[in-house]
Image (tube, rainbow, N blue to C red; front, side, top):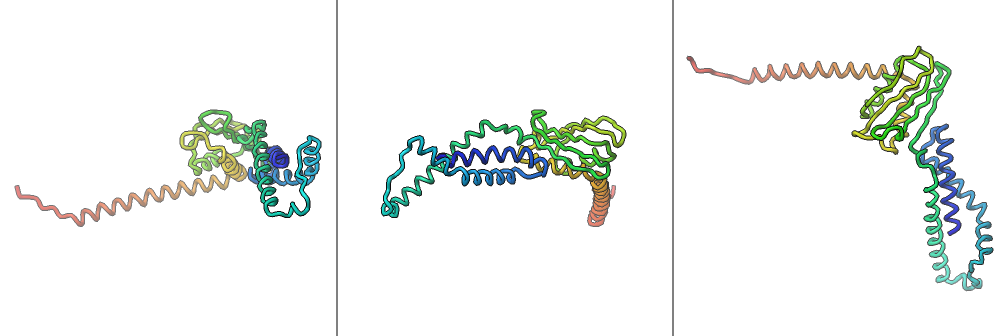
Length: 252
């Protein structure tokens, strides 16, 4: 029980700390942070396993006084295995109580930063479901740059997100600028599990807005060409219908 409780406790707190620090700096996923937390908990288990046993002895908890022959009995081994499984299960379940004391709102706030070589300064992208109740807020801080808002807008549209509003005051190019995008997914907020992917998409658009602007222009060009092609096909269908239809009117 003690080992299971300590294992989950260390994993939860270590994983949460790694997610909020190295996860943000290095762009690690939540699962990667949890795996790192598990490594910390395993190390703690190996390091403090004897401490747990010593604490149990000080508490006066009874221990079976089996002889070496009794320990080799199949029944004793099965009961020992069952007790170990139940003990770890109980301890890990009790360790989940620590989730009540962890700031889960940090999981809803994801901040990604990148260094932009052209301006030698960084852009930061913050995605939050706590700013507004009915939409997801995307905050982009960094130098003013032509095509950045258009690139982000195109990226959000390609992700099937509804853009409810954009706050971006005019600033001379190169000056520090604060931008806000308000987006929805199927009429509501973007699910929490999709915030990381959304932030990475926006960050890629911010890092290379010219590329996404060119892609947007190419997409619009293809759409226009498809529209012209549909009009031509419709005209040909009408001509074909006229050629296949014969109408004979009565003489007046």
